[in-house]
Length: 279
Ligand code: HEC
Image (tube, rainbow, N blue to C red; front, side, top):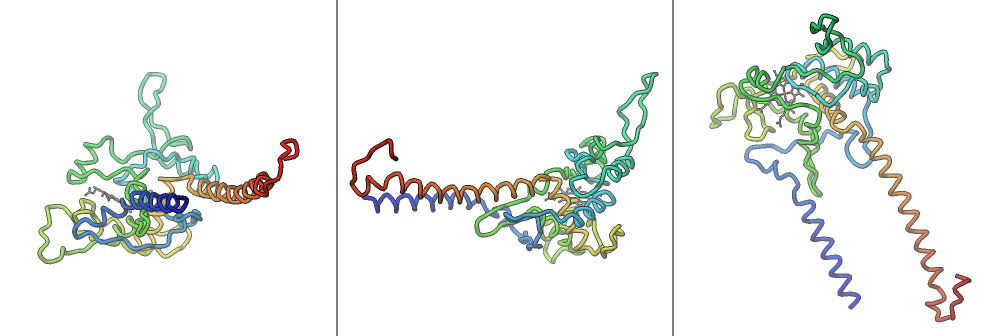
């Protein structure tokens, strides 16, 4: 009977694990779409850590290139302190932007420069304006894009970061033979359907990195993807570190419980009389 219950329990575990993980890479199965390669991002996996210099380079790529089309509504300048800037540097970054949300004494709108409490401004006034400038396509907001492109499975995972790198380097100047391209779209091996409305945004030396790192296409793609991952999940490192501490605590706690349990029941097992006051 015991054995039967154990086997049944094991089978239930396997079955639920299969159900849990079977959602993996459903998207990658889409026709013609290649599976992104892993770039070994330091923030992925259970020991994930942020790579601060890369995040700062990624911010530079976002500001100088991607922010012309992509908004990042949920990120405030003040949170850039988390990626290694001091408050004066944050103030300087914020001051580069203008905001029109204050009135003078006559009730006229005035333009003021940004402060750390402001959020990154959107490049377009609204979705219609964004679409009108991009051939009808909408450049998605960066705040959660990495998470939306992440497919975590048991046997094969695609991190959103790796997808973005693949997308940046996955353009083909000419579509492969036999592929009929739609007007204004670009061929990309990693985009669902292979036709994307975004022109290749990155190429070698598109930025000059403040820290002197050579700005190759792959490096800029890696850094901006890293930055987008931070924007999507700024408390990742704290969360994972806390998780590991909890697991360690549970491990020690289980050992203690095991010996406590043994001690409490030792007399019963031996068949001795129990005096409850001496347990
Ligand atoms: C000239 C405007 C423009 C610039 C600059 C630009 N993008 Fe885009 N991006 C778009 C548009 C438009 C789309 C929507 C494409 C579509 O739906 O076909 C898009 C979509 C995307 C997507 C989503 C793809 C998906 O799976 O849906 C990612 C990721 C992306 N861009 C990353 C970037 C990065 C990183 C940069 C900066 C290095 C950048 N973009 C710069 C216009 C732009």
